[in-house]
Length: 430
Image (tube, rainbow, N blue to C red):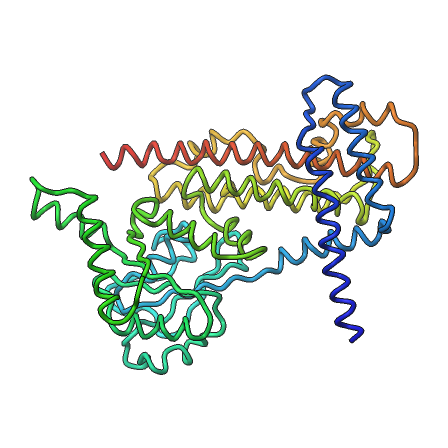
């Protein structure tokens, strides 16, 4: 009973802290470093007042512990996605596409015309290893009959399933879906290789070919066959792993994201390659909501005074967060190298449009320089020394602005890199 009581109290404390921080976040979003100094000063004072009010009923150590625990929870969040279907349906290609890789990239799932997967094989996202895609053996393979399949692939290990077919959905697909649903987990039907259907249709009927008509016919055909074998109102996503930003692929990614909750949803979003400008914006918005938590932990945990600055913070927390931001937006060396290979664009041209510091330049000295640039030292010089709590409030504000500025810079870099890559890709498709 004591353990239950402690856990319940802990959850209530986290909820209360989140609510308290909402009012501070609203005030901080209204602050602008480029605004009139007096206006900025007055706004900052309001933030300080709210910040200090936070500690009326909670000790500084308690708030620090909550903030740090929430960050650790995010870092340790696991998400396991199972991908299954008949042999040759394109499971491995789908896994590579969802991870932003091609078959020739390091860490890619092997692809081929024969069954390449004989047991569940895990493929973590390159920059987010806690988000994992599992390539399951094909349905109907000699050792994996439908009635024993889920038990053999350790069904309970996965959060949801993607069921892939490259032609018509069959009884095996529906039997699998029923069993997944019966056991309380989600599944998604994917019809792969639609690019091949479109090419064949255009070749055979060049005068009457209509992409929209072909896709609608494919969708209706899939739905008809699924309904015929007992699936009442199936949702089908049409896609091509070779052209993963087209057809229903963006809709599938959005659906997977929306169906996830809490930290798993955030982990999935941040693990995604920059498949669209919308994903970049969603990543930025999600990370912006995390910044107050990072700043709070930095201002209260293992704080070290920064020379020439009325701020004390944990540099390692800030440094780790900035490196993580860089990777979330695909600006690290590995992600850029993969993108260059996929689009035929020299990596030097992709790097040329990046204006934020390179990954190797993001170190302790760089973090301190950014803190010094934020303008808060001028503000704090006008304030009397009112003790450790005020220092924590100033540190919180400073780190918040510094991380927000860095986040905006890397998000803008990600947009430029994607635009540059797509220009080259567009020329190749003409």
